[in-house]
Length: 231
Image 1 (cartoon, helix red, strand yellow):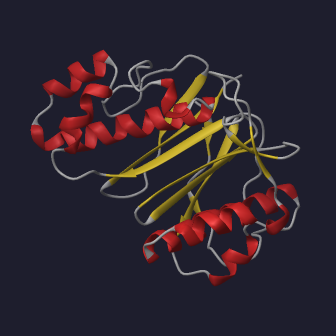
Image 2 (image 1 turned 60 degrees about the vertical axis):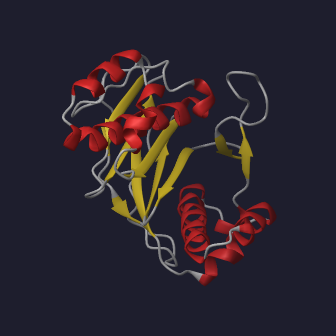
């Protein structure tokens, strides 16, 4: 079953709450691209842990991306929750594999679900009324996909091996983001195993029981996907 996927829209970092943001209802997901731009005000929105992580980043580009991603996420969630962005409190759900406190990120007291991913100059946020996972990745350097393809599901490895060299990078990347989106949605993360669930390397994702998995067009040289729980 395919979920109702809202169009990808831009939340401008540094802007106030946007009254035109699409409502999140059960069975739908709102997807946002947050621009990676300088945003000095974002630092003041972060909690102590986020500030520590941002200042620990050595490269200025990494700090800029972190502030854009986490400041933008706080502004967006603040709008949906009716809470000032700096008062949004994040928690970790229990891991579905071991029960430890390192599962899917969540907002305290619930109400909505979210997922955040960033790569190079893109930040993607998904907000939904059900568990959701998003992932965005820039195409890796030539040859990287050949080195990592052995981590995929056996059927995906077979598909990849049959592909012409010039299309392997794109096929691998869209397979990778589908897996990451799904594993982030379940809360398992990479510990859930890239080889366990088949999502396919083709133009469209394979069906995953209990989840709606959809590719998200975000521009050339990137792949992105969203996974939404159907339960």
